Image 1 (tube, rainbow, N blue to C red):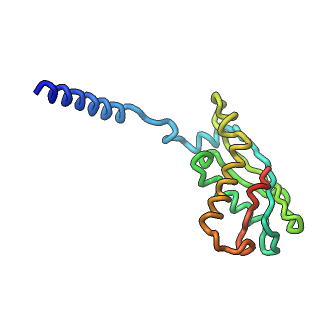
Image 2: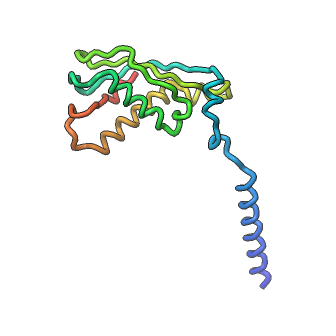
Image 3: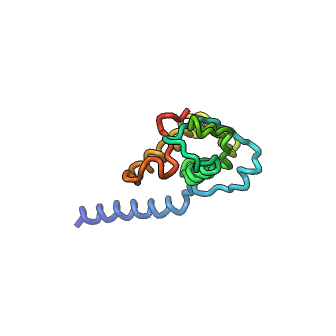
Length: 154
């Protein structure tokens, strides 16, 4: 009887602690104001290059811009900071694309620019999306859709 009472008390203490903690704790990352980021005036530009797997005449810079915008605006890590994507230079002959991304960043916090806005991290978001797309559509012919070369990202 005593053992049962002890386990019941421990269980109730844990249960009450969890209930109180969930009501008191709010994760700052879940609640953010996009207007506040826009009004902060802190912008971070990122430029990079990539290559298309095949250069077909029906691929235009607007298609690449659309793809970059979709990738970064839907990213859980960078979506809230992403503002725009722009293709700076694109040549169908060489299939090389030079692009620029614009992010609106919060006032400087410790480690934010070194980790979240790290150029390798930004590139790897696109690289992961390219690899994910390849695994989702393995049977699609290479030149039927806009296919980027993940090893060419710089």
